[in-house]
Length: 192
Image 1: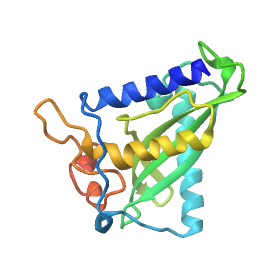
Image 2 (image 1 turned 180 degrees about the vertical axis):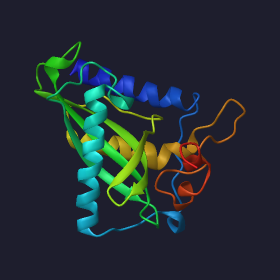
Image 3 (image 1 turned 90 degrees about the vertical axis):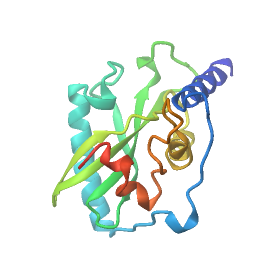
Protein backbone atom coordinates (compact mmCIF):
# COMPACT_ATOMS: atom_id res chain seq x y z
CA UNK A 1 0.00 0.00 0.00
CA UNK A 2 2.77 2.40 0.95
CA UNK A 3 4.71 1.70 -2.27
CA UNK A 4 1.59 2.28 -4.38
CA UNK A 5 1.01 5.60 -2.61
CA UNK A 6 4.67 6.52 -3.17
CA UNK A 7 4.29 5.75 -6.92
CA UNK A 8 1.30 8.09 -7.20
CA UNK A 9 3.09 10.83 -5.29
CA UNK A 10 6.06 10.59 -7.66
CA UNK A 11 3.72 10.59 -10.66
CA UNK A 12 1.91 13.71 -9.55
CA UNK A 13 5.11 15.48 -8.52
CA UNK A 14 6.46 14.81 -11.99
CA UNK A 15 3.31 16.17 -13.61
CA UNK A 16 3.36 19.15 -11.26
CA UNK A 17 6.99 20.06 -11.94
CA UNK A 18 6.52 19.51 -15.69
CA UNK A 19 4.11 22.41 -15.63
CA UNK A 20 6.55 24.76 -13.89
CA UNK A 21 4.69 24.40 -10.64
CA UNK A 22 1.38 25.49 -12.17
CA UNK A 23 -0.44 22.21 -12.57
CA UNK A 24 -3.77 22.81 -14.19
CA UNK A 25 -6.04 21.27 -16.72
CA UNK A 26 -7.45 22.77 -19.86
CA UNK A 27 -10.22 20.88 -21.58
CA UNK A 28 -10.32 20.99 -25.38
CA UNK A 29 -13.50 22.75 -26.55
CA UNK A 30 -15.94 20.30 -28.15
CA UNK A 31 -15.79 21.99 -31.55
CA UNK A 32 -12.02 21.34 -31.76
CA UNK A 33 -11.88 17.73 -30.55
CA UNK A 34 -10.13 15.59 -33.13
CA UNK A 35 -12.36 12.64 -33.98
CA UNK A 36 -10.65 11.04 -36.96
CA UNK A 37 -11.67 7.46 -37.66
CA UNK A 38 -9.73 5.22 -40.01
CA UNK A 39 -10.65 1.85 -41.43
CA UNK A 40 -9.90 -1.22 -39.35
CA UNK A 41 -7.49 -2.46 -42.01
CA UNK A 42 -5.52 0.82 -41.94
CA UNK A 43 -5.40 0.76 -38.15
CA UNK A 44 -4.16 -2.86 -38.04
CA UNK A 45 -1.58 -2.25 -40.78
CA UNK A 46 -0.31 0.92 -39.09
CA UNK A 47 -0.23 -0.77 -35.66
CA UNK A 48 1.96 -3.56 -37.07
CA UNK A 49 4.32 -1.06 -38.72
CA UNK A 50 4.55 1.11 -35.62
CA UNK A 51 5.16 -1.85 -33.31
CA UNK A 52 8.01 -3.07 -35.53
CA UNK A 53 9.62 0.40 -35.43
CA UNK A 54 9.18 0.64 -31.65
CA UNK A 55 10.62 -2.85 -31.08
CA UNK A 56 13.62 -1.75 -33.14
CA UNK A 57 14.08 1.27 -30.85
CA UNK A 58 13.67 -1.01 -27.83
CA UNK A 59 16.35 -3.37 -29.12
CA UNK A 60 18.77 -0.45 -29.51
CA UNK A 61 17.70 1.21 -26.21
CA UNK A 62 16.75 4.38 -28.10
CA UNK A 63 14.21 7.11 -27.36
CA UNK A 64 11.88 6.19 -24.50
CA UNK A 65 13.48 2.75 -24.20
CA UNK A 66 16.88 3.96 -22.98
CA UNK A 67 16.40 2.33 -19.55
CA UNK A 68 18.26 -0.96 -19.16
CA UNK A 69 15.20 -2.39 -17.33
CA UNK A 70 13.81 -2.94 -20.82
CA UNK A 71 15.05 -6.14 -22.45
CA UNK A 72 14.16 -8.69 -25.10
CA UNK A 73 11.10 -9.95 -23.17
CA UNK A 74 9.66 -6.46 -22.65
CA UNK A 75 6.20 -6.31 -24.22
CA UNK A 76 5.01 -3.27 -26.18
CA UNK A 77 1.28 -2.63 -26.55
CA UNK A 78 -0.28 -0.05 -28.85
CA UNK A 79 -2.86 1.56 -26.59
CA UNK A 80 -4.28 4.06 -29.08
CA UNK A 81 -3.39 5.67 -32.39
CA UNK A 82 -4.74 9.13 -33.17
CA UNK A 83 -4.75 10.49 -36.72
CA UNK A 84 -5.02 13.94 -38.21
CA UNK A 85 -7.55 14.52 -41.02
CA UNK A 86 -5.04 13.46 -43.71
CA UNK A 87 -4.14 10.16 -41.97
CA UNK A 88 -0.49 11.14 -42.50
CA UNK A 89 0.17 12.48 -39.01
CA UNK A 90 -0.28 10.30 -35.95
CA UNK A 91 0.11 10.25 -32.21
CA UNK A 92 0.57 6.87 -30.54
CA UNK A 93 0.19 5.91 -26.90
CA UNK A 94 2.34 2.85 -26.29
CA UNK A 95 2.23 0.84 -23.09
CA UNK A 96 5.29 -1.06 -21.95
CA UNK A 97 4.85 -4.20 -19.88
CA UNK A 98 7.81 -5.54 -17.95
CA UNK A 99 8.23 -8.08 -15.15
CA UNK A 100 8.55 -6.43 -11.75
CA UNK A 101 11.76 -8.38 -11.23
CA UNK A 102 13.39 -5.87 -13.62
CA UNK A 103 12.65 -2.94 -11.29
CA UNK A 104 15.26 -1.61 -8.89
CA UNK A 105 12.69 -1.73 -6.07
CA UNK A 106 10.10 -4.29 -7.19
CA UNK A 107 6.67 -4.58 -5.66
CA UNK A 108 6.52 -8.34 -5.23
CA UNK A 109 2.73 -8.28 -4.97
CA UNK A 110 2.61 -7.88 -8.77
CA UNK A 111 4.13 -9.85 -11.63
CA UNK A 112 4.34 -6.95 -14.10
CA UNK A 113 4.47 -3.17 -14.15
CA UNK A 114 3.62 -0.68 -16.89
CA UNK A 115 5.06 2.50 -18.29
CA UNK A 116 3.47 4.62 -21.03
CA UNK A 117 4.92 6.81 -23.74
CA UNK A 118 3.64 9.01 -26.52
CA UNK A 119 5.16 9.10 -29.99
CA UNK A 120 4.34 11.47 -32.82
CA UNK A 121 4.68 10.14 -36.33
CA UNK A 122 4.68 11.33 -39.88
CA UNK A 123 3.84 8.90 -42.67
CA UNK A 124 6.84 8.59 -45.00
CA UNK A 125 5.30 5.93 -47.25
CA UNK A 126 2.23 3.73 -47.32
CA UNK A 127 3.91 1.33 -44.88
CA UNK A 128 6.26 3.48 -42.82
CA UNK A 129 6.32 6.29 -40.28
CA UNK A 130 9.02 8.53 -38.94
CA UNK A 131 8.45 8.33 -35.17
CA UNK A 132 9.64 10.79 -32.56
CA UNK A 133 9.24 10.42 -28.80
CA UNK A 134 6.96 13.14 -27.40
CA UNK A 135 8.59 13.07 -23.98
CA UNK A 136 6.59 15.72 -22.15
CA UNK A 137 4.77 13.19 -19.96
CA UNK A 138 5.55 9.55 -19.35
CA UNK A 139 3.87 7.86 -16.42
CA UNK A 140 5.86 4.90 -15.09
CA UNK A 141 5.66 2.03 -12.61
CA UNK A 142 1.91 1.40 -12.65
CA UNK A 143 0.66 -2.06 -11.77
CA UNK A 144 -2.66 -1.69 -13.58
CA UNK A 145 -2.86 -1.48 -17.36
CA UNK A 146 -6.14 0.47 -17.46
CA UNK A 147 -4.92 3.01 -14.89
CA UNK A 148 -1.81 3.85 -16.89
CA UNK A 149 -3.84 4.05 -20.11
CA UNK A 150 -6.18 6.53 -18.43
CA UNK A 151 -3.25 8.47 -16.94
CA UNK A 152 -1.40 9.08 -20.20
CA UNK A 153 -4.62 10.09 -21.95
CA UNK A 154 -5.50 12.57 -19.22
CA UNK A 155 -2.01 14.09 -19.29
CA UNK A 156 -1.93 14.64 -23.04
CA UNK A 157 -5.64 15.50 -23.39
CA UNK A 158 -6.05 17.94 -20.49
CA UNK A 159 -2.64 19.07 -19.22
CA UNK A 160 -0.56 19.53 -22.36
CA UNK A 161 -2.17 22.87 -23.22
CA UNK A 162 -1.62 24.05 -19.64
CA UNK A 163 2.19 23.79 -19.75
CA UNK A 164 3.78 27.23 -19.72
CA UNK A 165 7.36 28.29 -20.28
CA UNK A 166 9.50 30.59 -18.12
CA UNK A 167 7.82 33.66 -19.65
CA UNK A 168 4.31 32.43 -18.70
CA UNK A 169 3.58 31.56 -22.34
CA UNK A 170 1.97 28.29 -23.42
CA UNK A 171 4.48 25.77 -24.73
CA UNK A 172 2.14 23.72 -26.95
CA UNK A 173 -1.02 25.90 -27.01
CA UNK A 174 -3.32 22.89 -27.57
CA UNK A 175 -3.91 19.44 -26.17
CA UNK A 176 -3.12 16.40 -28.28
CA UNK A 177 -6.84 15.73 -28.91
CA UNK A 178 -7.28 19.21 -30.44
CA UNK A 179 -7.48 19.48 -34.26
CA UNK A 180 -5.37 22.63 -34.06
CA UNK A 181 -2.44 20.72 -32.52
CA UNK A 182 -1.70 19.03 -35.87
CA UNK A 183 -1.06 22.30 -37.73
CA UNK A 184 0.12 24.43 -34.83
CA UNK A 185 3.30 24.96 -32.91
CA UNK A 186 3.00 21.67 -31.02
CA UNK A 187 3.34 19.59 -34.18
CA UNK A 188 5.92 21.91 -35.72
CA UNK A 189 8.15 21.46 -32.69
CA UNK A 190 8.73 17.91 -33.92
CA UNK A 191 8.10 18.00 -37.66
CA UNK A 192 8.09 20.48 -40.58
